[in-house]
Length: 193
Image (cartoon, rainbow, N blue to C red; front, side, top):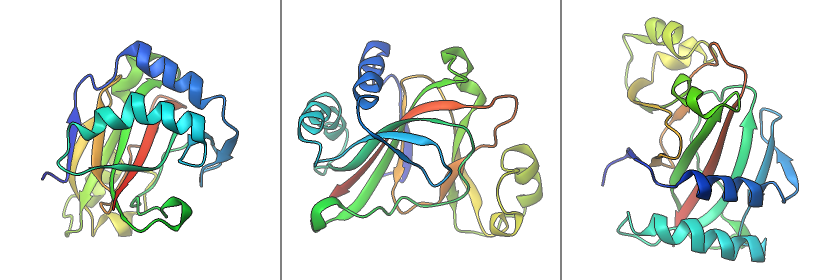
């Protein structure tokens, strides 16, 4: 299995708008960057059953294992994430292993046509001889010293309604916010039993 990839046109515009509207009915929590995230997990029974039918069942047709939901959310981020992994705790002390995380771009500055301005970047833990150039070109919000030990594996330019996915243990981050101030997306974290 690949470590990361992109599935073109995973959802339609109508499906994404419906998802965003359902997510926005939930009580927001704050991301580690201070942005509001409107989320769903298995403890939000009605929304979870809807999400399973609309998204998780479809997602499972692309993978050879049964993926379960840790949590999913809609957010409008005002700051880029620095390098991190997605090894999240599994709800209700269920035994399992975080597996993949997914991101569905919706818009940049609330304009769908601006999606191409943002990227999600996946890293390998290798010496990066291009750390200074990468820092200037994509990653000015990241610690340069950390970049020296993280080589860019893939850069996924955002396209509306595509699904970018990566193995949860992989280091990744946002590209810096250059010429825009917000980006809107749906994020999904999964696990396997």
